[in-house]
Structures are given as C-alpha cells and as structure tokens.
Length: 123
Image (cartoon, rainbow, N blue to C red):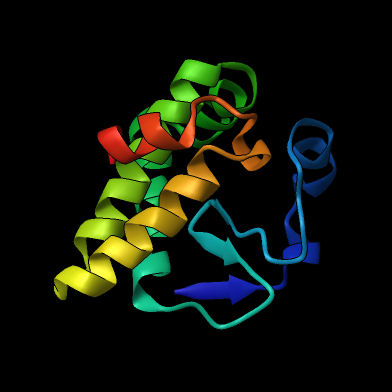
C-alpha cells in the first residue's frame, strides 16, 4: 500500500473546487492513498473500498461521476463507510466510529448530501 502526502494528490485543485478540503482530508486514487498522517486499519479499509470501486467503474469514469453526480458519490461513500464501520469488532468502538463516520458523511466534505440522522440509519 502506497501512502503519499495530500499535497501530491494529482486532482487536488479539482476536488478543492467541489469540496470543503482540509489538512486531514484523505484521498484514494489509482491505488495510492493521499494522507497527511498514518492511518488506522479502518481508514485503510474505507480507502481500499474506493480502489475496488475505481477498478469496477474505471478510474476516469469513477472520478467524473464522483465529482458530478451526488447520488453516485453518496452510494460510493455509503459502501466505504459501511465497510469501515463493520471492520471494528468491539461494539462500543464500532458505535463511536459510526457516529464519527455519520458526522463526516453528512458534512460539507461531501456536499451535505444527507442529514446526520439519515446517515445513522443508512450506515
């Protein structure tokens, strides 16, 4: 698994035009994770889900749809967050992670596509 700094993400400018990007934002692109810190296993599982999606749809098509189609982006993130949350075996830790993931999923990071309560029901 290759991890590079976020500033090396080749589509950073394009993503910044669309999303509320911060220093802690993580990107998965073409089998490389772009992050500014070490990642726990559950985050690697989330990003690896995006690699599988990119392989399924084709990298360029996936990126194009992810940036332009809110429903597609939500579908991709729901799958990745479910895999991330379900990777935690301890129920209490899993619940804490689910709350954090649902806050993220319902935030401006993804374009405020759903509410926190909707995310809790879906994830």
